Length: 314
Image (cartoon, rainbow, N blue to C red; front, side):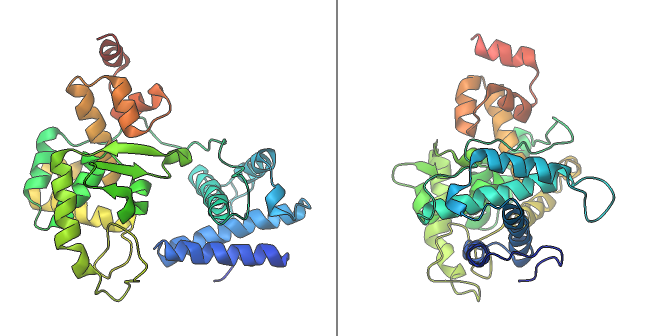
């Protein structure tokens, strides 16, 4: 667990918290380079707290988190002479949010001071790549394993964010009740996602017929609660989900679909678009996606304002 040479945390309690967070991320199944990056980001935050004379993690306030955000947003990048990349800044703040969420779960703090703050993830365009309904049908048709269909059903059939899919545990999926409980969606908001009969069938086939076979992999931990496992038995991560999707796209032999560079997260955009196209009220689509604002749904679906207004007025 190396640290950048210019980041040295002195406070022993903070050192222990950083190590605990590192181990927590490993238990969640994050790969080494991702875990190390989060560990380094957390250490930079803890070093900043030390420099401000803030040595009691239980007394950190929302205003102090905001001050760090202002600092990290304007500090020079180590790679060039410019300021830190906005996406990197967002990842730093997400790490701090995850850190306090861990402390909250372990009863080491009473509140998460980041809970009410919004760290907007920068996008280069409001246009999102989507697959047509026919292309989605083709993806399902070329599935060979139950796991492949289950992956499509989580991303498209449930409209989950990539992070929500990665964090999805066995106990979150209630097949009998036909719902998925998303305990920590974007902004740490809990929501319930309804499951269609087709999605229930796909998830059931994977869970009862294939998941157990994956528990023989060298990375499997008997305490692992992840619903979706990779071939070595650990929690499947975003890059592996995208590899599965890329393989499906190749099998379709659909050149137009290949050119779209569809990712797992694009399937969420696709289901949102298709629901609106079918006349589902935009408010219902907003709730399904877990958006707090109607404008966000508009961006995800890249439907023009007049189309949205027409749906609202129906």
